[in-house]
Length: 429
Ligand code: AMP
Image 1 (tube, rainbow, N blue to C red):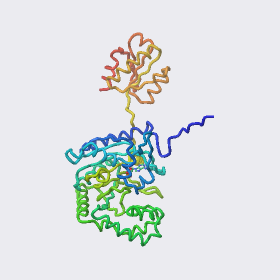
Image 2 (cartoon, helix red, strand yellow):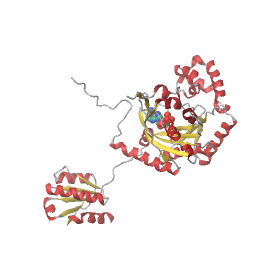
Image 3 (tube, rainbow, N blue to C red):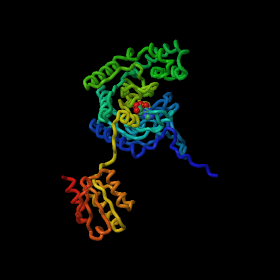
Image 4 (cartoon, helix red, strand yellow):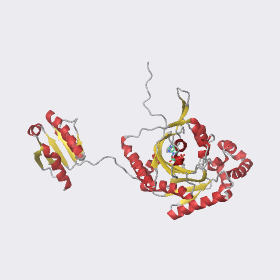
């Protein structure tokens, strides 16, 4: 016997049902209008790229590439991966299309799904959506602050409160190798007390030990050397200026020396934005936005240095916060008129009338599949429309229609061809 198909979406991947579409649309629309104000233009890149792009760009020792890729071999033998993040793909497109020849900086934004093979849990999915910003070709710290400002204002425009930016600098090739040495030597001295993951990280990607969330590693983190104290002059000044810009903008931020972000390509500034509500017991506050500067990524994937800074906001997490803070968004357009019909001829005529209302841009509710007038009027009542139009057999023959005021119950008969005009006139009052 044929096996029944499991009627379930894959773990960590969700349908976006009609009742949630209005939240997604709200985030998309707010993001698009806000970031165009900051000069970002939209770019769509494929959902898949060569796996190699992420291995090189995101980094082989990152969690994303090590554990979270959805990859496949095509019939032609190419190894592709569903994008786990936007940045390497957008940088690839920037280089591929010669955008280095455009006036710099080039500011690009994207919105769409990303895929990570994670353990599904609250706020952590395998398919989720991001608003992603990238600024290429500008090394000024003003850009770092503008990216942070754009994301902060996106959340603020969506009416999220208690926002806080966490920020750190992780230096660059000028000072990080030296800091790594100091850190490795410190971690060696505590090696036995590290969690299993951090024992591996200490060898492969020691900075990641600093953002380990395991209880066991917290005392080790607390005494670890901090990169901020070991920045070279250039990285130090860059960071100082970013903070000065944030001060000037009045954005609330907090220095977090343990913020290193998971990815290999970051240089200098790294940041995350949180909503600072008391987290439910036992849970860690989740970041809504993460990003930073990555001046080496261009070289790693394309052979040349490109100053770059960007970040990504997680749309599902933003919507969750909007709902938690009691923000309700209804996608339904309020309809003030209901069209009821009785009999075959009336049903036919009401289809045409419905079109006339659509062309006049007057939202019209109907129950074409229902025959009983009582049922239809009850629905009109529930929808709290102001007027009901009733087209019965007699009216259909006489080319008239009844216009009923649902507030006081009065009704009058008007010519069918004037129905739109009559309703429009009354709605204007
Ligand atoms: P990242 O690309 O890891 O810096 O993530 C940027 C933002 O995407 C985070 O701040 C979250 O809002 C969101 N995000 C990251 N991973 C997930 C996930 N597995 N599920 C849902 N949202 C996520």
